[in-house]
Length: 557
Image (tube, rainbow, N blue to C red; front, side, top):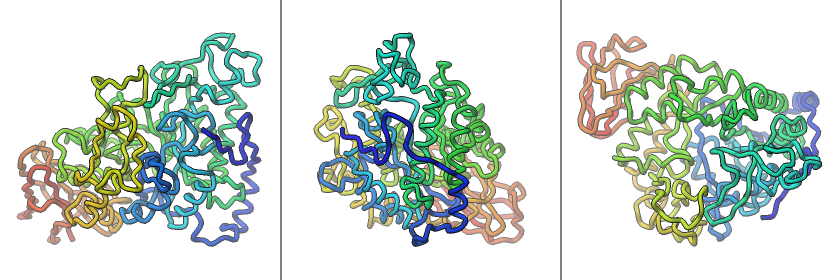
């Protein structure tokens, strides 16, 4: 793979001089740099955003090679805006032999299979021209054997990069392990590279990383940020990286200084932490430390995710996050992401169940995150261990089914489909997307009952009622442990939301006196929900009858 550096020296620190005070002065004198205001980054507030996570290799192919690319994303911005998306996150774009691009040999490059640096800058400017935002996913903790720091220091202690990556011996013959204790990884196609951990506490590496993030914020260095990212996703964020004791206190000692310096350059830049200790009960550590110690702006709500099938856990997630989230900080609300089985493949899935859970999660308090294809009901599960791939472990192919081609057309062989794994066995034989399966933009676009059009209407509804993006939230007793109820309200509007967690019909009663706002003789109306669930209000009691997968969003005026 050819590396496209774009004014970056691979064998040293990025050749850019950052002068935050000068930039601040220039921006104060000329905030738009003399350019059309429409080309500037969006000013939309964090709580108003709706994020869309794209796995670029699988999203949209613009040049006929069946590999998703940057121009393919640019061509589909109309689709994303129609869905209600305001902000795009893309998994790593830098060069890698791995299909997911998470381990690289050049942190500052663009994978040529995705396009050129010019294609990247054009995409970012087009996103900004539409008033949208772009966030870049980064993982800087590891480097492959092809990265100069690793390549030149291996078995060479006299290398200038001797202390840029970790070794277990003085002769640099035994590189340190990475996540899961491995020293390398085989990709789905049999390609293999050694990978090791980067010494992020080396002063030269620290400077490189600060300059790297500053570079993506303003690639041409003109201080206008129209071609720069609006924020970063920090993959695999941990305080003690991989629990090895090599990089401890990462939140305060590495990420906080870096984040502070990048925000001095552009205070509007946001940082999103994907916390990696998923096995901890969310109420023990929902992610507050990332806010307080590292200064990140958004973390993932694993409480909401784990609680989607458990009424008590979901209610607890609402309460814990609502009580402990600092002002100006937020949690991501999600059903799917690229490291988990898709919600469309969960036991008991149906379009009705998906509609219910989408309303329950995305109308809660936090920032919505949609994983590409989720709005269609795309399926995806980890490849079973029983399937013989012919590739030795550890390999990354097991997650391919979770990251299949976005289904634009009913025919998976149509132009634009990013079926990059078509000739790779057994992934193609075990694929979960098929022609004429009812799951595609073409098949759902004009169907008023489709999941796609439901998602569109859900986010239009959310955007039209600020109680759902900046209002208050409170869980409400229902006299039925299988029915979840919570209220969203602000000074303009009041809503009661109820959801049935049982596989059969459920009734519940909610006392008006238990609501966090005055009801009086107000008129109640159903503003969202399934077609069969009903409600009535009598003598200060809201009585609901919910069908399987039923839900109601009620407004009182």
